[in-house]
Length: 235
Image 1 (cartoon, rainbow, N blue to C red):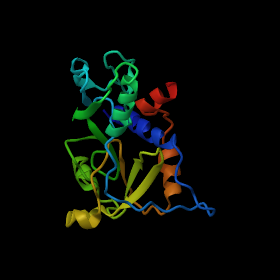
Image 2 (image 1 turned 30 degrees about the vertical axis):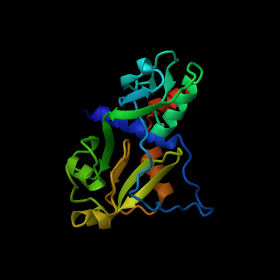
Image 3 (image 1 turned 90 degrees about the vertical axis):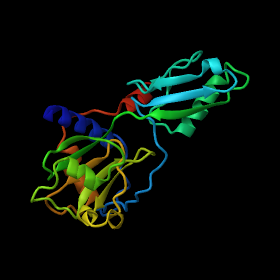
Image 4 (image 1 turned 60 degrees about the horizontal axis):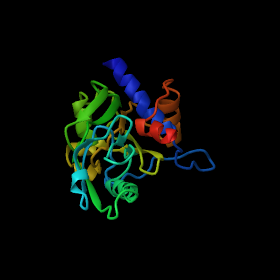
């Protein structure tokens, strides 16, 4: 289990390092980004289940389309279509354009009917670091509790969240999780997203770029990436 956790963490963090980081100022020192708990549109991932309703040709509609490990779905009359790492509006546009080559009226709607496993990694000064499968909307404090809670060396007021944004950039944020014990709204924790990395340090980390260098790049010799990154490259 520990080996699997390390390998999967390698995949998550290597995917982070495969995209450009935020611009570093001329002095080489970058602070952590301001964090907002607001969420962008949900992005589909392998294991999610979709329903596609084609209004002009109901016989072509599909009720239980599972997004495959390669990030694609298969509709009648069409080649497999890459939908992973795309929002539902993006998928609707993609499917309509594809169906327009087969139907006079390609009006359709895709919706997510079931979500695949939502996982995050919690590491550093916690009781049981590793992969956490979220049962629903979970914030950083709840994920840390699920990982065995803080150790007595944990710096609870500077928990690091590493997240890949929809535009491909990777940002790290500093969260005062200790405040969440009394009022999660004051702590501004917000719900986690799939593949977020929560790191609990035992000393203060002042610089984003130093953290990314010491804890992300240098600490992991493993080189992986997300399935949909590989599939997109192959396209």
